[in-house]
Image (tube, rainbow, N blue to C red; front, side):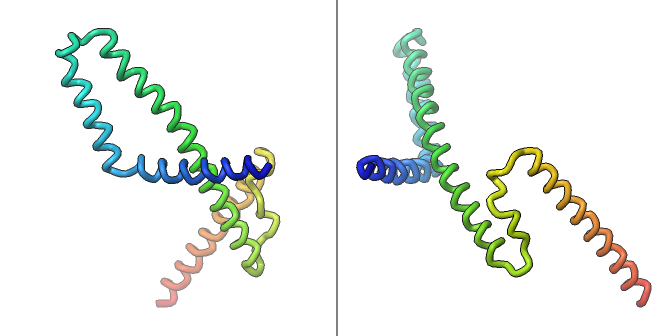
Length: 139
């Protein structure tokens, strides 16, 4: 089990680094450069099927691998954000601790909670409008 944790940690570091680097303008410019070189080389290879197959295969492989790396990074970031939000809810006096770990409840339950909070927000906006009207009336 210790070996699995070691490789998970290595993958995590690699995925975060690669995701960070691939999201930079430099990476985009390199990708544009590679496509331009491929496009410019078209006449040299007579725009052959092999020439087209090279870029199609390369982009498919890169896309396939990027999906997993980006998904891993996004999952990790989402989990970290959830922990932070849970801690804020837990630490705030008067907060509804039933809202902790909402990402684990069923869709129907989440919809009901959402509707409840939408109604609370609507009531708060209406109360604010009334308060604003009474302020203006006193001036």
